[in-house]
Length: 222
Image (cartoon, rainbow, N blue to C red; front, side, top):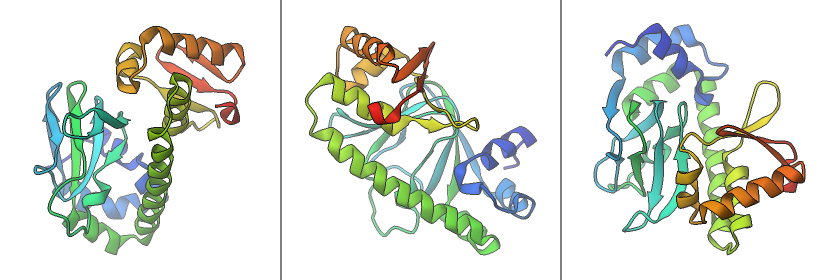
């Protein structure tokens, strides 16, 4: 399918395409991608139904869970976030987790064949992909630490560290698009405890909450 110029720009804002020759990649990208809409609470990927390729959230939010009842939350995906890296060039015949739409969302899929074609066109994309994999390993190691914590304070701190994104001005921001009531359920802490912890962190000058955004003022304090 053909993408609009706005959609193309949104794809190229993704980390994987930084520093690449966008004009060279654009013709291949726009002709061979899949853009699929998912309704709120619907399944995007699960153990047996998935695409061998990368997914990019174009708009909306999704949640990555694991476990038979989906009770183990791995990550919240917002606009611009990427998933499915484990399926590319993999010999496994099942997906390792479940991805569900939190809100109505659209997902752009780049299948394995398309990614391989783009790799051949631009080696910078290969370097970015390897860097992305390295970051995923670091993220998963940090999640292992999160599985062993017991206190609500530790859960909130780990969530903030894992989901903070660096802005162009150098600030680290966590965008809680799902809202704090949903976040309390995701973290398995009470809503009152979540707000108390956020207030405590604000008083200590570690974070600053503005609406659904949390600005990290002192990452070492988390």
